[in-house]
Length: 496
Image 1 (cartoon, rainbow, N blue to C red):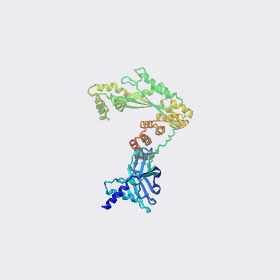
Image 2 (image 1 turned 45 degrees about the horizontal axis):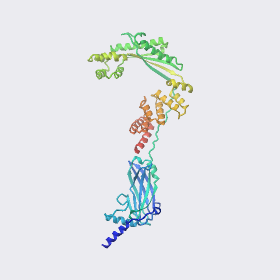
Image 3 (image 1 turned 60 degrees about the horizontal axis):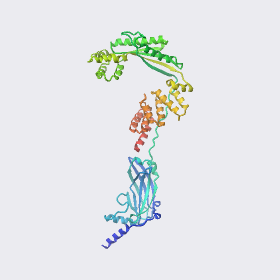
Image 4 (image 1 turned 90 degrees about the vertical axis):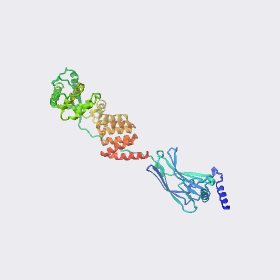
């Protein structure tokens, strides 16, 4: 009983208040050697490893040290603590052990089960502890730091001092991933001979079973004037030389397939003869072809008539008889009610009766000053290379440079270098949305180089799933840059 009273009295004395003064703070941190520090961010966790060497620590018997690693956000507004290492002096360790046995007695600081380990210091002896702890990763931790905070407490848990020291090894592990995308400028292929073409449609009206062109019949005068104007604009341009005019005749499905083939032939030849005589074009520049009934055109035009009664049935009949077009047309005639075929005949078929003509010509090369003027009026007469030479005269940081590069992409939406380089310039100017729109709407959107640029644009816009999908397609298509960019996207996603 006597020993029990003695123990209780010692315990009460240990917890009695002790006066602490600001000018009498204690710190043992300089005597503690922290070695082999390592901070690793992996699998949504941050792991801290270090060796806590106490061999040079001379700890007062009544003191407890709590070494508390704390992760602090870059702006200092948030914190997350790792489990502390607690080091007890000889007497404090006894107090701790007694407090454990006497459940009614309050435990000393950091002895309530939250510590990584509790060490009893034996002064003068070598002691060390291999520390390893993890905390869940959160995005706010990026660009943060880890501080090792020391809390020294004495009798009854009174604070005796505190100090902190940074763990520099955390800077690299906690640094936000900075992507470095591969999106090099593509040099356009030279165009020694600039070949251009303009395609138009002439919807001339003919009397039944006739292929003679009557200029004053219905709207023929306007159609013929349009043809002559198109030919004249090219013919009179001293910068170009016509190399050929290609005319293709089409007919609508009413009547027999054989008859309509002949009809489309004769009407195409009639237009060629008119251009030869009226526009003074040599016969050897005129080339005529004919396709007969334009069933593909019929399917396209039907798309403009969503309200056509039984339109799905019309589609089905056309698809059912690809090699029996006369019988197919007969089935269309039999549709009930008869107004269906009447609408086909009067509203849809007329659009199929036409001659398409393509004027091909060569364009001379231009010097820089000529190209600067030409790009404002007829950029299509310049090559991409000529446009880029104009852009270079303005300097890459100028608005004029950007506008010329974009003009090249708008003029040649099927030119891979023009499209990719324009998107690259837009991203460099901070307009990622414009780059995405340009790439998505290009005529070469499936090219590996274009897909790679689109993947980079998606990533810069925060659309990482889309970025990975198109970059994978680009990689499969043979883009070496896409493989690198996939790694960059993976690095960003790991930070999320």
